[in-house]
Length: 494
Image (cartoon, rainbow, N blue to C red):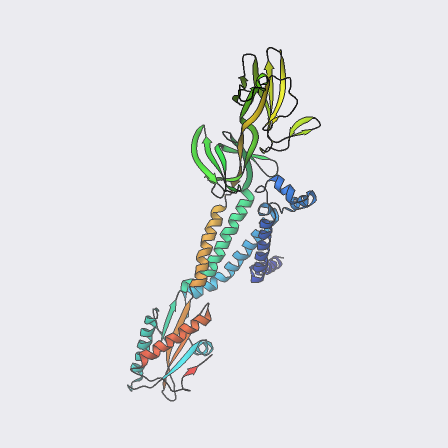
């Protein structure tokens, strides 16, 4: 039984650690991440935008499948975990061999290795000194000078009474794949942490209002250990009237004390205690702050140019005296009025068609008159009212919409992004190049040849150009003591 379990474990481990499984899982993560950027996500998207973008049936399907909150769905986090496990297993499987290769490089090539290596070149040398040992020493010295001129640090290697040279560059690049793997693991770890313990919600604040309650997408709320206050909010437009930027001046209040203040705009959030406050929306809240009216007594209407016109400013439920007999009270405000079934109602909170309900009290008549007033004038028959009114200016309150997020895994994500950049720099800009040089003397003829071989872990075409340049440099160094072989005598082995 134990043997069967070990066999199942080994097979499962090999499958998870295989390149094929890792690639398939990674492709699935990329596809689903793309879906998360195409489908509108909660709570970043306002409910009314979601409802206008999708029909109720489609929205129900998207919500039930988790496609409107992809990066917090259980199936996306499970897939990210499987990808992470596959990357970790592949790294563990390859680490021992890579460490042996890194810590104990192959420095002296045997005959079978020299036969198969590409690229390589043989240089046949004429021994003019008559002494084989000094000739081999001269060849190695010449090769060392050529290697040093090309940025290598050559090392003499001896094996079985035979000398050779080993040189390399950028051995550290052999770890590039593990650096990339580690960066992906950090990114996925941060994603899983955010998905399990992170949250997103919204707070809408009027100017001067503070709150510590965040509305979450599922309809629940989360209470913060501090409050966020909106001191001011505004909108800047381009000359053509299109929005340029929304801004909010926020203050963090903890224990009754202001601990942090910042003016935020889109993509420049306020961060406090691991919670980010992003500028999401801005608009009017439909509540009037000040209403300015032009008031003219009815008795003066016929006297053109001499009417006792008054400008009065009122807040909601404020009362102003028009004359010794008449007072007016600002009773109700409708930012976008329309008439339905004989009643004045608001179509929206936008300041499009404002209307104000005034209560005019006449002591002489001993009664109150109700008047609806717009910028165009009075909206109903008010012939019995002693004053005529017209709205000249309306100042309404505004609100700022904040997207609130707590993402405890972001340190892992951003650390992984930085490490990924380092790993990719290793991949694209550092190539592990190895050079072997061995003087070989023919046992029958005593003829001396210099074998030169090289290998690179990437960009082999570019390495061949460097290799040929190195061979030319060695030939230049050998000219004082040897001749290059005529055409047909110098051998390339591919």
